[in-house]
Length: 144
Image (cartoon, rainbow, N blue to C red; front, side):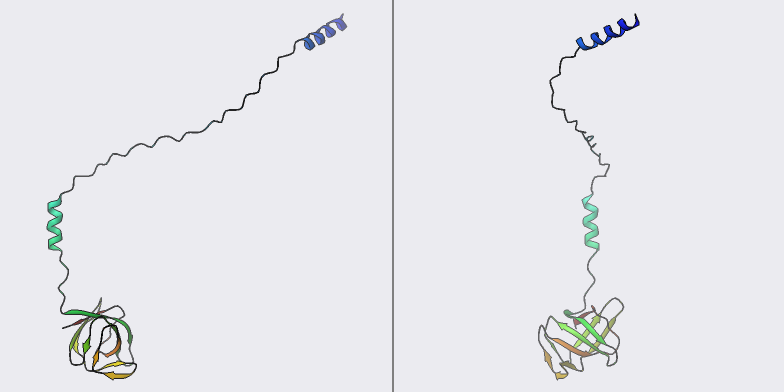
């Protein structure tokens, strides 16, 4: 009897076939990024009257003379500075050299271009100027 039961079960399995399912394309699941929350500004309203007053108070420092050039190099052994001129310059004039740590006023006693003494220099020249104390690269030169 045991044999008959097994045969019945196998037969039942063969007859119960599932109908084939239609294949559907798999849906792509996209992960949506959470929406950014808008930030609320808690800034105070601008007060223009005070800013205008501050701008008036903060004036540029008073310049003594006309800007004529910049120091490009300094030779400490001979105490000479190289100046790139933006304006013409003559021997006998007075210059002021102003920088972060430099504040020097002196008259021009000698100027040179390529080791040749000159009496006047024009705009765009790089001249050598005898100075009485140390100056630094980037110092500004004013004509008084």
